[in-house]
Length: 93
Image (cartoon, rainbow, N blue to C red; front, side):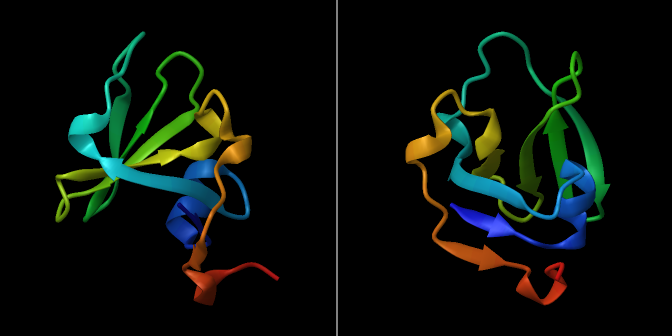
């Protein structure tokens, strides 16, 4: 788990940073509906809820075996603690 400060994550979340948890793709099962996906860059796509627009996931083409989930969408995110900052060079002041 980490904070991501890159401009791509900031744009996708509408926030100063994203909080992401990387998990194996095969461990994720969408229960109520499958996310809608959009290509957010030449190297990645993002999943979001087509009903409410909430950002749900990030996946890189080069790493099909893993997916990042937005921690704010978890039922109980309070016990999940980010371990590092990614994209610190683009971090907002």
